[in-house]
Length: 473
Image (cartoon, rainbow, N blue to C red; front, side, top):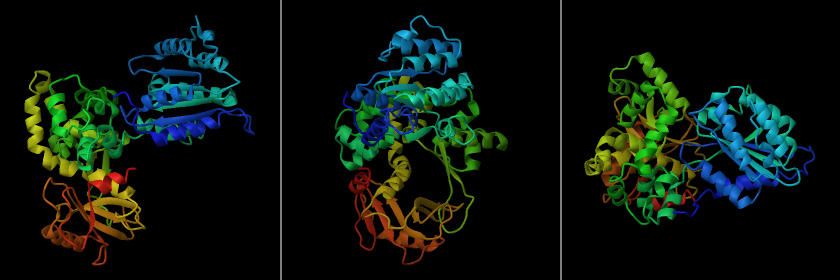
């Protein structure tokens, strides 16, 4: 698929920033910087390329590499600058700057002054890792040169935690760049891209995670198992390789973090069970690995939402595609590589209903939070779940005014994501019991039923796949 899908909001944001790069500001500093972050393979670079193409402006696009050093970075930067569309790109010809200060001074000299231009540093965390002084050098040149010229400087990175830190108070680039997050394609983007009905679109989202590279291989109108049946025959497809490449980039040498991540991906959610599944890892090593995984935003640590504090922390894979990959593909890559993807497909079929039921829960909660009409009541500031150590009760949806400790519970709900079984009287009775066990809820607290196959009883706010999908528009 060559058509560019989604990203309307992100393109509009970049267009607004570009309109300010015109040299007519009162400060005499028309230059702007943007710190763009997003998970690996969500299409950040593709978005920026589309933006540059639509703008028609002179540009320089440089991508750093994790497998390089400062000398290599400088050489590749000069090569990218020499072949760029900047009017004075010829200034780089034959140049061999010895450090980033010299290279960025060359860039400043090559920027046009009579019209806007765009400069991209893609995978900027690699530049900082290779040369810790790069960040301070860029700040110096931005203050003295780039901010005085009509240039839009886009700094792109996949290390979410590092990209967030670049704008913190104690960092050189503090308050110099606007921040922008590029999320995966949404469920509604997936539905429109693949021409799928709402329920099938959520299935495709759970498998693809909204990653454009995975969706590009997905035939229009194909259901999950039609797609998997064809994709699992080829070990080089994006579905197969994207998870391993992401992990290799995030944790190139941290075997313990990979081991803990695999344990969480297999379905373990508590500290004790994760440590046991990771081979009885010592508590100190497990804590360090969990801290690294949550700091990198690969894993989310969540606690029960109610009016009482709780320490019953659970851990989840944050990215839907990585969640699917770790559960079904990563442990069985050897099968696919030797041409037995049929075994992998059979395993997915056998576990699909139960796995999907849990995997869809965070997506449903996010959808409910976005739903303006027919969802959670006004005054809802957060949506989570509730559980106890014994899982009695375990409540799928808890809406509240704030978290992690609420002042007021605004709704309690159940998610029933089965193919043909609607939410019925038995489910409603169980929901009533769960509401009575939730700290902060009362008999007047509204009830929600989120069901793939519909709701067959009264007395509850019914939400189906179509309403959830509409929330993303």
